[in-house]
Image 1 (cartoon, rainbow over the protein chains, first blue to last red):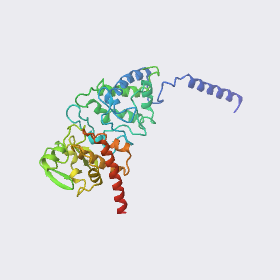
Image 2: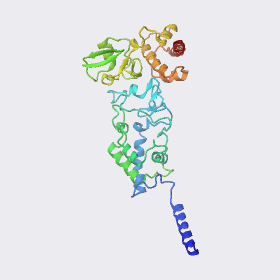
Image 3: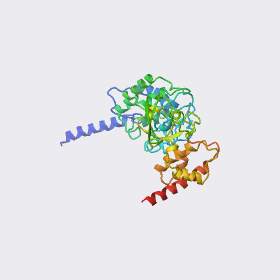
Image 4: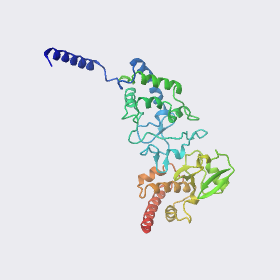
Length: 202
Length: 158
């Protein structure tokens, strides 16, 4: 390499380094998510996503401990059933021993879905207590989101157990927006770069 | 007609698919060892085994049991000699007795998974079986005794 080439190469390297350091990577969770990225639209959409995920219908099965939560006040599930290794309970206390494929009619009866469970013990996917920043980062990281890539995440909005959050039977307040509005916000957040709100956002 | 396998016998039942299994067991088949407690899966008095799992029959529709094996307290053993039944008698566990069939059926599932359960395992497995007489300590003791009996029985069979 001659002297002129070295100067050009050196200049290019400096530019690359400068560009890398000038990017604010602390808020960006997933690079190369989509061609068009709008961090403002992404963060704005995540506000709606966060309000849904932190509602009792979603958060109650994403507890910080190993006992699910229950009710609009998110108290510990009566009978204290435990997560178990696969998230489906332990011994004679499996989720599906009470939770049927469909809702059991009446107040204070178990809501139902064919695959009722908590996240498994090796990846608890906790929502309870997470800030918007923490939850956004957790949701797009395959090491903390159930090994989901972007395509899986988008598809997850239509997961049967996710959708049942809007149809949990009598006496349970649904999430703050409709499932359609949630799905729209979820996809908007993801497709605009899946930006996490500032760590200062509460 | 709906066919159900209950305690290794086949029953043809004239019942709607959404009838709770408990109703069919007690009112159609006449197996009244399984009790109605709360009717909303809160107390555990109605626990039976469905393919080995301790389901609450008051909220389990019979449509879920089609093609599966249902076992009630009457079918737990052929001559009432299941280690749990023997331990229950030996320690005189029951007081009023209403919840005990459910307690035993839940304990039986525990013992199939854990041959030597700890106190914590027992608490975890039977947390959903309520006893208003408060026989919990005798239940726990009886499960330990049954585990010992089961261990001795399997050693003798080896």
